[in-house]
Length: 305
Image 1 (cartoon, one colour):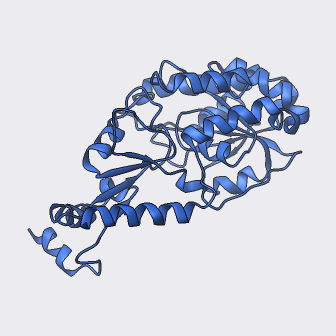
Image 2 (image 1 turned 180 degrees about the vertical axis):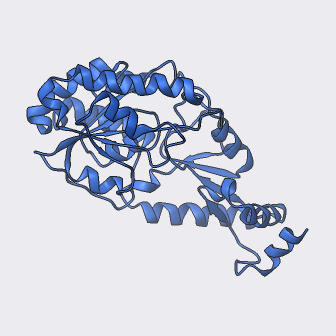
């Protein structure tokens, strides 16, 4: 009751026409109470996609939950024929951003960790045991590279270690490996790289792909399972050397394109596949803010008509 009373003193609109969030529906209890009260009074709730995995994972409890509680779910480009709540808008994180890497730079290998115990139900490795399999795959990738390329890889640790001892594990396998502990902004590391290597089905490769930055993806498909509608898109990525189902295949691709990454990435076949994939999963509208404004006005008008 005391927490509920806090919403009366918030400097927020008393009668909002639309409420939009991408993560407060989950992480902010005060917002939840305020939004729930306004929703009961007829204000539509819009939830914007926050990160990757949505629309492509075989199953994702958070995606299902968000669509269920929202009046409209704004995706990064994908939709479901049977679900009219989903409105494709675009990749919010990519709006207005451009980036140029270094054609003589390194390969940026981006890592992830998860809590030691199960914490969130979706198509991904679960708990410490499956994360260990994930880490083993990372080591397999480095070992499969020509020795001369080992020094060209910068490993970017996930900022939360969750007791996995990332630094100690990597140095135990590769004493001279270059690494960054997850403190520096990812975008600053990409600017110094010629190739981005994604190792899990989440946000990062959607950002690099939408920014048209050379990207190689690999993961264990038994952990990062895909829904039927997404499989054809990943087959296309696989056909041009972007997506790989084993670390060794990804390492061979990196070695094959290393001396001229730009020629591979800029080829017509790669760019056609990249564009088709991004249109579905990481679309950036030509005028994103105008598109968002038009959508908000349309929803507000409809709800109060």
